Image 1: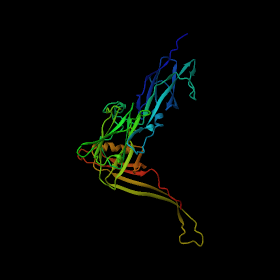
Image 2 (image 1 turned 30 degrees about the vertical axis):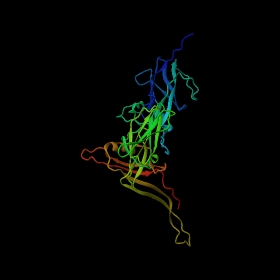
Image 3 (image 1 turned 180 degrees about the vertical axis):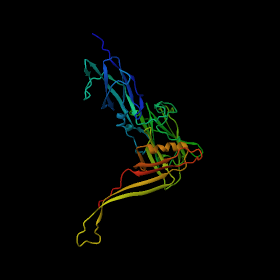
Image 4 (image 1 turned 120 degrees about the vertical axis):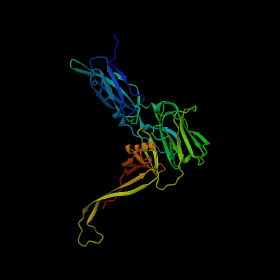
Length: 385
């Protein structure tokens, strides 16, 4: 009996954890000249979601590239957490587990042959390994992989570009997304104003169901003798496996303060409290029609009548003077498609950023503010006339 030689092979794979808003490419190579096309069924979290067929890469006769980033993106959103405890939880909406079932299409005598079936019941010639596509968008200037976030060392980064020292009020909440391949604990060390360690607590050990976890922090639960705290991730043996992020308590009282949360380019949720100037207004417009006034009308009867009134709440906010690093970070608010006002008690009001001004560099002036104009995503509900 002869030995069956498989014509197709996978010669390039995405990383195990890969950015869904950058190329997610499998490269397939055929060892025979009869392969004229390759079909791949794309499986997202175990379910077939798309079928893609490819002719050979331009300039080759046997190399086929499958970039499935657009398929992955359709099944990714974000995890905006309702935070009532300091703990580690899953980020199930911010990642998808993907693989391909791959089918050869061969030609002989003008006849095309393949085992692919539209309903997914065909027997694949090849099945890829798994990758996890993360809801991240790496910029052109960044390293085009997630190693800085996934490699388990003490400088492993959280999924944020924020500065490593931030402010938080005692009534606010924080979430830090992270990549992980094993069981983790979150550690929170609290210090007083003399930099003396007052407390060191850990969360319950946690193993993400896939690759992303979230460190949620409820500042309302931290003792009042703590002036600042530092958070890290560690393994169950207390070995530190992440960078440190420090949060200084902001004790000032400001009626103009407004806290935003937004999806950052790495797929995490960042937050910042704007505590300088704040302006609010209601913008409205009306359409009318002319109603017939019957004989014997009363003074209160109207001719011109409102058919519909639309109203939008508009807000303009300003930060205090910030460093260049803070301004570069906050400029991401203008690029985010998901921004909310955090009204406290886990109430999040969706807004659209309509205008933004974040000057990040002027060599003659070192002090800058961030300025954003927002409109609430939902109109006011009004009655008909």
